[in-house]
Length: 257
Image (cartoon, rainbow, N blue to C red; front, side, top):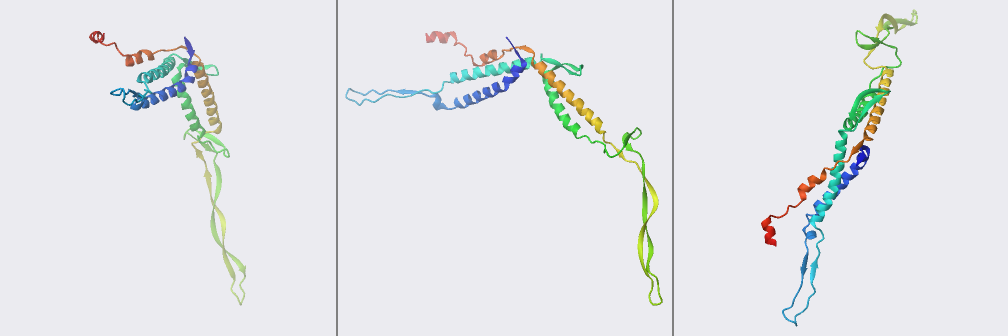
């Protein structure tokens, strides 16, 4: 009998949760002695005139064998589903293709799942890459290995004090003079800006290719998960080995007879 890997993946979590739940419940139940204990007490008076009392009884509420059987049943399914998935993961493979180009051939499912998570993390990194200031014109400087702007000049000025006569001197008063400062050009700055950032168009192109690659990985995983796989049965021999009670020795059988 065959199934699809995607079907196994769909039920695996539910089967696992159910198995752990039943195993945990059984584990706690078998540690409660009152549930496993039963008793029957009957009373017989010494003579016919003695008081007659009704019997007393307590039923066994839990049989260890029943708990074991329930655990075996759920673990058998859990083990077999997990084994089917793991066996399938070694066989279910698909190509990672972008625009018809095979980047990696016959990639197994575990690596496809790993790659999906890694590409998601890489997208966060790429989105935060620094980009060049769009307000500037940038060119590549091969000598420095960075981008630079075209050189531009700005004047350097220096404040020079100058006397400004507010009122000329008269025989009665001195001249009224104040000092003012004028910006006098004294030189020229030549500026070139450099940046280790990337052009926004380059970052955008990388993000576009990343999205195409993420889609390709997803398609490959879906294709691999659609692979027909045989159902694997491994639980029974393991659990039978653990819980099957061997027959008593021949001498004990004879004694019992």
